[in-house]
Length: 472
Image (cartoon, rainbow, N blue to C red):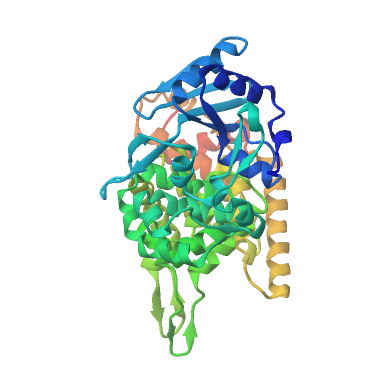
């Protein structure tokens, strides 16, 4: 007797769908992520995929008519799908189908099919699991590819030949790696080899789709697992060559540098323990990309990466543009953190002066906390003594930031004397002298020559004006 999973279907919505399907005389099933996550005890998914052996759109319309509040239906006739948002659940309805592919596109030619046809076209066995919503076998599990075994053993494998599965829709290669990272599963060797063999096919996938999967990997607890798999299969070099360029250790005259690729992945894992901010994680991933183009060997001092932060921040723009990542404040934030990524490290290694901390806070502004988090994640030394010293040094820098900030209010600095006040004091029209005086006031505050107060700044303004030959 087949095991029933009726307890997965206690939400009243499933009974409504079952009733609507019976009235239409079609079979229907819940399939994919909802079933997988239920069986893995990962909580109840809010995105629910329903397959009808018949018209998915007709079933969606019937279900909507039975729901309170007459929820709106989004119909996608070209794809034969319909979507209903009900309470906090998103239901997607599709007719069971079989698919065939052309070599130059991941968009399939679709025909009506059976439930088995629909399960055959699924990407992985763990996503081909279906629960019946039909009254005669409500809650029964349909598992033609031993998806349950794959779940129990933690294996990602495709229902059909992986070579065909990945060639047909190369985005599935990224999805395989993403699921392996999210679920801490292993991709079976045959499937992993098929990804390596088909890696060049990723070129037909839109950048937006690739980035969507990259972001999901970035938001995992241990993203290095996904990036290691992307690297091992050769996909990473096609997607983020700036990152793979960091791999390797060169030795000249007995002097080596660390492998900046594997160091970067460690930094990303470290930062994920303390923040779930996506763009801060991106900053950790890209913080050293300028090291490949700036690497030099000098006989007297060994390996150097001079200016890698500046070069890296310029590379961020090109990388974001190529991958169609947002070219807005999110990109500027990543650029800024890459550019400033060594500043707190330098402070932590030297005696921390108030003026250096004021400049750090002035330049980082609201992002100073994130910058410190990035720098602390950058500690990857395996030497416990060094690690303790670095962490204590950063603690001192943080304390100094708090102390200076409370006293001098440098974050989001606004000059205590405005341009209008300078013009009025010296009877000036808009001119370069105003900029010179404003800059001098800012520098005097950052250097600690004067406090960040209006009275002191005004006195300084009058002296500076006089030195420029201006008269009150």
